[in-house]
Amino acid sequence: MSSADTDRIERWVWILIYGGLLVLVLGVAVEDLNFALGWSMVTGGGGAAVAGVVLIFIRSRMKA
Image (cartoon, rainbow, N blue to C red):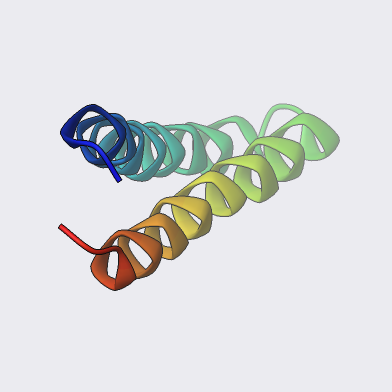
């Protein structure tokens, strides 16, 4: 595994975690105005954050 691959995974980890949590919080705020849109955002943001955590696990198992 090259250094560029690990750098790319580490970049995606933080994008998915922070972006997912941001969308999740915005979804909670939007939920009062539009229930379906709010829960869609909560679900999508939570899924993105979970994907980031999974990438952390994958990255920890990679050979340097």
